[in-house]
Length: 481
Image (tube, rainbow, N blue to C red):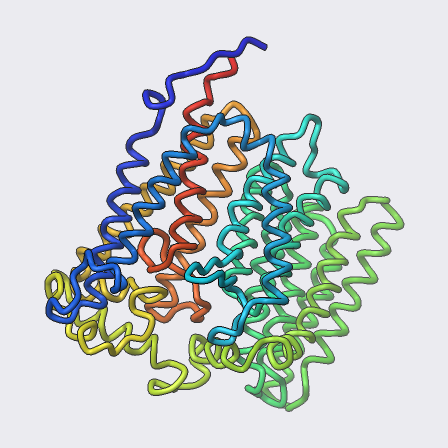
């Protein structure tokens, strides 16, 4: 294959670099604003947060430029080695990291603190891209899918062992990449179902309606309807009418009877699900079509998952995580306790109005009402001082950046480059959505930093490295003709 080297600096996507510089600068200014106390500490004083962030920014730019100078082929060659090194760091972290605010995720070496979980995102993106870029790799092949799954789940489990659940959840975004590369949409559908079933099961666990637990009844009803829908999609609307009449008709009749006679409808729903499973197995034996087995597995797994939700919520999640979820779902009101951060954050954002109070004029910020306001809750500083206009511009910049990365990923000729680009876009999207969601109270508080804004060297280094490696890969997309 003919091969040529392009001029790196002429081929770089300077629009993406410009957006990166704007976001990093805005983040630095926001960190200064969050800790500003009437000029007692200069934003250039490294004894303060803003001054230290300036050091992180300068070092990040050095890292970025250095990454641009490395031959793009080396990232693919050393992808597995980088992944293995980070996995070793994660394992070491589990055993030697000190307990900091309930987590064991920081390696401390003198004055330097490193969070390997942040670097694991980069390592996993590289390793997954290397795997999927392998000659004759097929994602829908069982072997290929299991290898990709192992690369994603290994760091996720190690980070969970560090009690850093928020960072672990980021790795689920790699399933978006798998979907782009040909993974069945049913797996994404199953993921959305898992989230919906968990929310319904937890939110309405103790709510009764005519002697029926509302949470379990709602989920079982959805399982019945979805199972019928999947069968309808696979067999056509004019077939198995009798089957639909029995299942949906029995469900509707049970509901009507419960209006006049109180009884637990859970047993009726379980009976309907059992009938669906037996019918699907019979259809498989008759037609030898594995789609019926898959629908049956979906029904069985959904029921098992439903009855495990209570155990997971009560015995697996930490008490503070349970309380945060309860606050987010409106199960408890605790504005001075668990919900304090979110409540104060919403007050700060709301007080900014449309135009904001002006840079360095945020009263909630000055009086330190919002904890972690220069890290996980940095967005509330933007909302208070720059108002709706400032937050909108920030979100537009992030949106343009993510869309730009997707467009760049689509123009790549090499699978390795494309998969890595989608990994970067997915990670940025997840961080943006969850961080802003938890700041305004629509998602649980799980400790997700806002890219390029939140204070911290590990986070900024990680996102800078993720972005600049992709910029280097994109600049060399035309090397192979």
